[in-house]
Structures are given as structure tokens and as C-alpha cells.
Image (tube, rainbow, N blue to C red; front, side, top):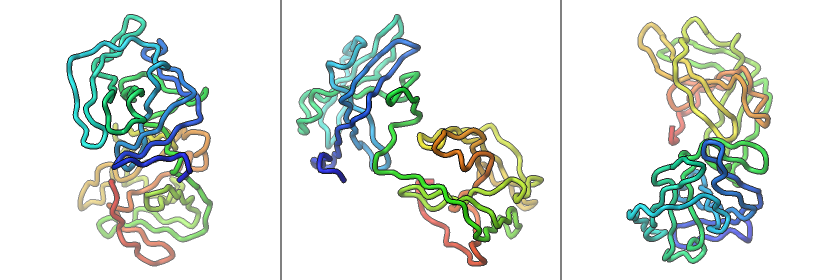
Length: 251
């Protein structure tokens, strides 16, 4: 944790150094070089923007929201360029956390685009304390579901991400693709990009969305392009012949 990181009560705050912009249907909502990262939940931060760096009109809704740690927040509609995002901004003007009082929280999902410098970001701001390493390996990875070997590889790429179990990304040629069926599920990750999913039919049961891959990952995760991984939490994975304990995670 840097010396500038502050933790007040249950709120963790850190001033950012990146230029951050938010847009709603092409219209600029906020533009700041003084963002604040606020951890409202332990998994990732949210951007709070100095009020003077918000370019959109904030229209009071008359509603408030209560946070035990951040205090009452006044809720605003965000209006810009003839478009309105209902209830997309909040201000904790009388927060017990003084650093929050002059900041505006703009709902990430309510905006159509967010940029750090000139690079688009997705899902939520990147956590400066989260690291993603992707390492080539010759370890033997075998994946079983319902006693059926679904994948067997000696050329995994292992993705190590802070706070999550290692993920073993395998070449599709080392996976029983005849057992896999693509689904319509997609998820986004701020570090890796957009993932697509497969279900696995072992003949005993169908396991929905237990396999995923990134066909065109973000530049920093190019090493896993075209590979696929399995949820360690939901399948049996043998590493060099040893069955790994299924980890417990938010997945």
C-alpha cells in the first residue's frame, strides 16, 4: 500500500495519477487528472471524480442512499448532450470521510465509455494492487469432469491474478472439443477483455459455462489469445499427476 493510500473506517481511498474521462453517448461527462479510487467493496475500486471536473449537469432526484461507512449520498441524474442517465451520480456531501465530500461518484455501468488516458477500460477501474502474470509452462495439466478426461496438456499458460487461484489456459487442440458446446454467455474483465464460454456434456451431465476463453484479449493479456480455461472451483484438475483441491473464490 502506498503512503498516499488512506483507510478511514471501512473505506479505502487512494488518489489516482491517470487522466480519466467518462462519456455518455459520445458526450463528455467528466474529465479529470485527479481521480480518486475508492474501494466500496474489497474486490475492486470505483472512480470518484472532483465535482469541478464533472462537465455534465447533475440534476437532483430528491433521493438519498445510505452507506454505513460513507454516509448519506444525494442521488443525481446525469444530463449531457440531450441524453440523461437516471440516478447515475452520487455525492456524499456530509460524509464522515472528509475526502469524499467534494467528489462525485459516477456509475461506471451507466456510462457508454470510460478512458484511462486514451485507452478504453471495461467493467470497473483497474486495481493498482492487482497484478496479472501469464507464464508459459511445461507442467502436465489434466482436467476431469464426472470422471471423464476433458483436457490433457503439457503446454499450459498459467495466469496468476492477485486474489484468485491460478488459471490454466490450454490449447484447444488439447481439449475434447467434441464435448464442448458454445453458449451465448459473455463476460468482461478489465485486465483481459471479453470472454466467451462453452458448456461441457460428459454424457452424465451438462455443465454450463465451465470453460471460457479470450479470442481477442486486451494487449497485456495476448498470451492467452485462442486458449481456454476451466473453473478450478467446478472441475477436477490434476497438476503433474496430483489432484488440486478445489479453491473457494467469488466464482
